[in-house]
Image 1: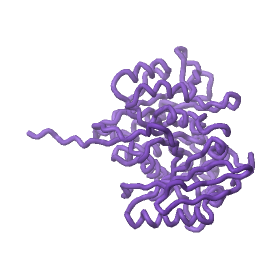
Image 2: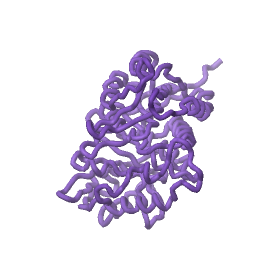
Image 3: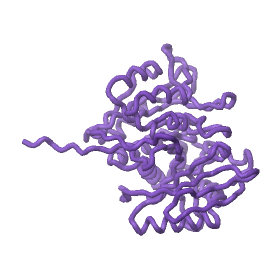
Image 4: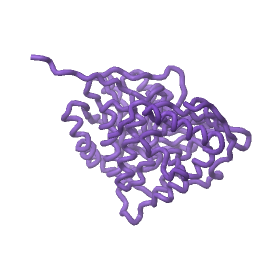
Length: 375
């Protein structure tokens, strides 16, 4: 279990500066700074992370998995592009400052609209060559994409259990997914939390938009967990999740339309999207991906995948993440704990999830400890 309970923020705002870009450290324990930098990769040079990872939902044999060195090389170029000169010194000084107080330092990356093309890069793999470590694999330095929006969402007081609504969709005509096996794996992974009364895990009977709307009118749902197909339409520049219609055929639901539905259900504090391309956005706007659209629409936080993840990786990721979340950890710290677990097991899939948040401290739930009734 991780030990750091308090975090301070290192806010990095990235904007365009002509043909180059500028990074502003707008909030950090050690002060402020800025730097003009060149793109870490030429246009089209960096493939989508799925191409780098080579992962599919079915687990790959060990000899076909990407080497960690590949991620480190790419991550070092990302790191070196921004963290140089004064900005690098400021990061080191900030980490040292919070460490003396026993705190952590969350890296909150913010991308201006004119720098949206940089937001498509996998900044979660930032690699510090001098320290010889991935920044986001440290308990003291979780990485998230922060959307600075009006009406930030503070923690919601809840009594256990937290309610997770699983929406598993595999429409006819699309690449088959073994949703029943993944559902069973998810149940097994969360069984200890369910038996301890920390979670209620419920599956939506019919993966349709209408069924989801009807269920949300019932008992409060705290976490929406989607498992299925996702996509990004280059022509319309919108991200979507593939639900089903009444006949089991594909029904594309845009992120902004799903956000409109969830807006009327403020108990939903987190969307966990296990769908390939659920985190992708266009190079024209930082809000076109499904996860980004949900957070912009009012959901405090969303976890999405920037590449396809294997069944085993997704199961272990969810198990550790939800266990940490149930312990009252901030959502970025909980995701970092899950990343560390996968990395320690030798899986490079720790790099796939992306966290988007509008919460100022990433505490989605203030979990009230319920004492036994005295005799």
